[in-house]
Figure 1 (tube, rainbow, N blue to C red):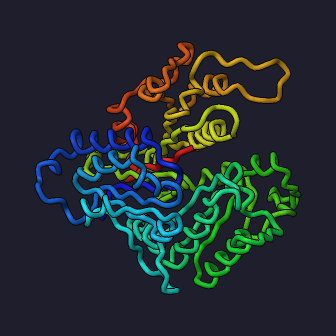
Figure 2 (figure 1 turned 135 degrees about the vertical axis):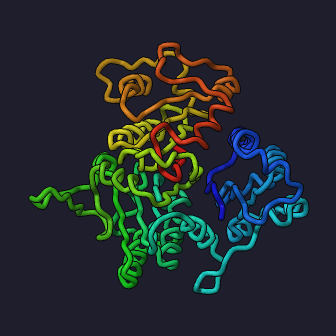
Figure 3 (figure 1 turned 120 degrees about the horizontal axis):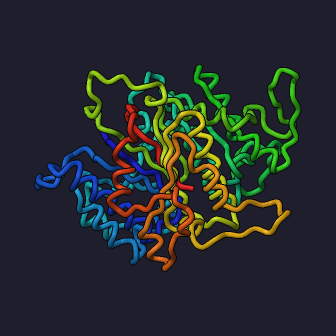
Amino acid sequence: MTSHFFLLGSQLTQERLSWIEEGLKFFFVKLNPENLLHSSKPKDAIFSFFLTGDALYSLQNPQTLPVWEIILSMPSVKIICDCNELELRGISIERLKMKNPDQVIDRNSLALNGQPSFWKDVIKLARQHEQPVPSTVGYLQMESPYMHQSAHAALLFLAAGVEAHASVDLYAYLDGIHLGHIGQNPSECENIGKGLEEVNERAQKKGLSCQMIACGRCAAARGYSTWDDGQGVVISTCSIKPFKIRNLREIINQFERNHIILAKDSASIQFKKDRQSPSSSPSENGKKSPITILVTRRPYGTEKAFGAISFAVACAYEGIQTRVIFIEDGVYALMGEHKLEKGTHFFNLQEVVDAVAGSENLQFFSFNPSLNRRGITKNRKLNAVLDIGSQELGQLLFYPPNGVSANHQRVIFF
C-alpha cells in the first residue's frame, strides 16, 4: 500500500519539483535509510505522484525532466499520469518510460463505461486508508468553472468516488463557490452545475452521502443572495439544490474527520503507526489530522494568499494543528514593510499574519531557499514566522506535530 501520494494539476516549476525532491531525500536518508540499501526496488510504491492537467508538461520540459529523473532514481517512487490529458496535450513521456518502465504509468484503470479513468486510480488510492467502509473522500475546490479546468477535475473526482461506492464531499472555497451557481449553460463545455446535480442523484440512489458545502463569506463577497429560514439555516436563491452555503466552520468541521481530502495541488502524508507509546492517551484534538498549508502565490493580485491564511486560522480555531509555510512566490508576503493607505478597504497581509501569529494550534514558517532564489529577505519584525530550510521542511512534512496521534496529514497548495 502506498504510504504517501501527491496529486498535482498545476504547472510544475523546477523550483517546486526541487523542494519536493529535497523532501524525498530527507525522508529516505533520515527516516527510511534501509530503503536505500536494497538494490531492487519494492513492488509497492512508498511515494506516488498523480499528475494531470498542466503538471504533465513537466515530464517533457528540459528544466524539470532532470529533476524527475533524480526523483525516480530513489526507491519506491511511481508516477501515474492522466492518459487522456497526455493525449490531449500531445506530451511524450517515452524518455522517462524507457529508463523507468515500472515507475512511469501512462495507462489508467477502466471506469464502468469502459473508458480509462485517471480519477478511478486516484480514488482507489485515497480509499486505502484506515476508515470504515463505505469510506468518504473529500475535495477542496478554489477555482471557478470554465475559466479553470480544475473544476472539471473536481467533478470527475466526485463521480469516480460515487462509482467506487464512496461517500463524497465537495468543499467550495474562494472562486470555487461558482461551481454551484444555478442556470449554468455553457455551449462548448460540460455543464459543471448539472454534473454536480447528477453526482448527487447517483449518490442518493446508492445510499451514499454527498455533501457540497460552500463558504458563506466567499459566497457573500461574490453576490450570492441568501435568506434565513428562521431557524439559522441559510438558503441561497442562486445555487443548485445540492449546494449548501454555510459558515466556513462547517467546512472545517469536515476537516476534523479522518478521511482523505484532496485539492488541485495537494498531498496525503502518512505517519508511522509505531511512534505513539501504548501508555499515551492523546486528546481529542490530537486525533484530528493536522494540515500544512503552502502559500505559493504573491500576497496581492489574487485572494489566494489571504484565503490561505483565513483557512489556516479557521482550522486552528477548531483545534486542528495547522502549519503555514510561505514558499515559492509566497515569500513575497514577507518581504519589506507593507503599507496600506488609511481608509482603504483592503488588507495588509503582514498585519494579518502578525495579528493571528500567536493563535493556538497555528504556526508560520518561511522557506529560506525561496527567499534566496529571489534575492529578498524577510521583514525582521515578523518574528513569529520561523525560518526553515530543506531539512526542516522535511521534518514538517513527515513528522507529526507534538501531541498528534492521527495517522496522516493533509497538505494543500494555495
